Image (cartoon, rainbow, N blue to C red):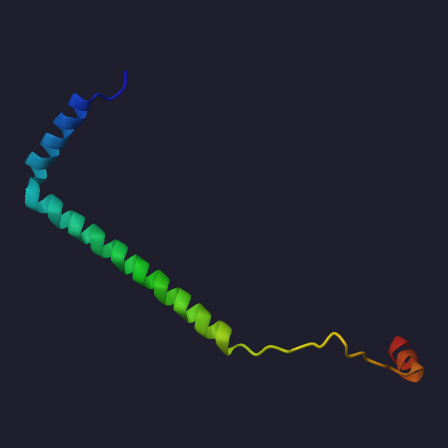
Length: 79
């Protein structure tokens, strides 16, 4: 026994009678404003992440550079 189309229609009619058409449309408008605000917040968050990523400093490493240490430095670091 699932919910039939007639039961859904009866519930919809009762909701419209209780709250009125204006109240439902007002509620939907508030929901739409909330969704827009949420999306705007996400976009602002993404923009701030790209700003901070662009302002980060990077250290370039060249693969052809080699680091040479003398044996005396190796011994002093090992001890």
